[in-house]
Image (tube, rainbow, N blue to C red):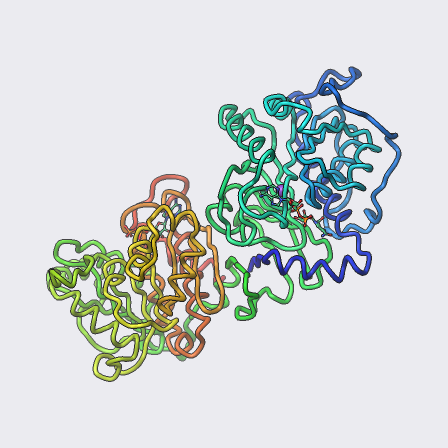
Length: 585
Ligand SMILES: NC(=O)C1=CN([C@@H]2O[C@H](COP(=O)(O)OP(=O)(O)OC[C@H]3O[C@@H](n4cnc5c(N)ncnc54)[C@H](O)[C@@H]3O)[C@@H](O)[C@H]2O)[C@@H](O)CC1
Ligand SMILES: Nc1ncnc2c1ncn2[C@@H]1O[C@H](COP(=O)(O)OP(=O)(O)O)[C@@H](O)[C@H]1O
Ligand SMILES: [K+]
């Protein structure tokens, strides 16, 4: 599990360590410098923006150079914690780094890191955007031979030019102390750099964000103004929610977590996308003790621990029966896709309820499906069912009536009549327009941004699709609080909000954005809810975890089916068994 801490939690974790004299900033700066050195050393010398050996570095005009190369000014670097903290080897002499330095400790990290780079022979220029800068950091930087410029003394286009001529740019404008969009002059500088980066394409220098890409919402992942996209973010102590959440996560590049000694974080490792694992300490597998602002990301091992794998004592009914009410004669495909997702995810049995002709098509695709009513342990409601308009009434082969009946069972209103007990449900597409009662957490709403906007508008909120996409976590949480249900908001990064906290899953390739992919997800989640039906009703936090698990499996199945190319929704369902086998193996 990747576990992102809110900025308040970060501060609380730092306080006792700072009081005890633990050199947090020195550790952070050392690890940051190592990340930069690794990257620069790995580049062929010919590709660097270096001058020919032996020639002095051309310096921006007005640069002051003070101190001697031998001075240190960094206490405690020998005790740096990251496991891979051995000095990075390789010749980096003459390579150029440009530091964008803000007024706070984020700028301090950057200046100390710049001192390391300068001592290794790099030509390092720091642009101070504010009249204030971290004093000791600045002194150490200058003592190591770094060049200092104040933004007030130069023109923004000049700084952009320096950036273009650099091998590495370090974004140390703001960290967890950031509030809102970057203000001038930092905002103007970053806007100009963003434009230059877009124009430069691949010729832009390697960009490293210090702790976070400056300008993102640390705790909520919003992007309220200009942000320089990083190739790598080196983050300290713990992940921050903005590094996992959309849309900010898209600016972070590869995220590297550095252990600077927070007591809760027992082991850290470097990770890149979904390729490598991070193990965080006692919060790793607990599931329910998320702090108020925590955001987490499931990993394969977490999903394996949740998956209702059958034992020798099981039979089809103990494994969970999924009831699917999906599709109409006009939109039969969703019924095939949702039932296929459920079957492929390993349901004990899948029942289909709907018009006869659609049932026939379902059977042609999946002869395992039972096209008849009966007991179920979880519902999948709404894929391919049109939105319900109370003024016009249903026009849908009776599917709306069936959905209303099943929803009553989910909320417990008609439980004995309809199915014999409260039960979890996936509520998707058309069923999202049929909600009349407050829902339990074991009801999982699965809207995309447009559908969530409509739901929110129905609840009296002014939110259109663009607003939801700009603040996915906020609106998913709002919908959870307003309806009581667990909310799974689909997208490139899918956000889940429920009583146990929030999850942000980024498992699927962009090819997954194809019609019907969401229907398959609904089926997979239905199987998970059915397999753990009693647990989900007993533990109000479980539905969110199962929802995140379904998203991971769906995303990995999409990646497997895609293999880098286009993917059809039914192929995602087809790839699910192999993904589950791999997770459980
Ligand atoms: N406290 C510590 O001992 C440690 C702090 N660390 C670093 O320190 C950072 C936090 O430092 P600070 O609390 O000093 O805060 P930051 O350096 O993140 O930012 C605060 C400064 O930025 C300005 N600012 C805030 N929002 C702004 C905006 N939208 N536009 C322009 N300027 C804005 C504030 O006025 C303030 O001067 C972390 O992100 C991390 O990089 C690390 O060195 C680890 C140890
Ligand atoms: N850019 C993207 N990258 C990865 N996955 C995406 C992207 N956009 C959408 N998805 C995923 O594709 C699926 C689309 O579902 P949905 O919008 O409900 O389509 P449908 O209703 O046609 O099935 C969801 O699982 C969503 O998370
Ligand atoms: K930063």
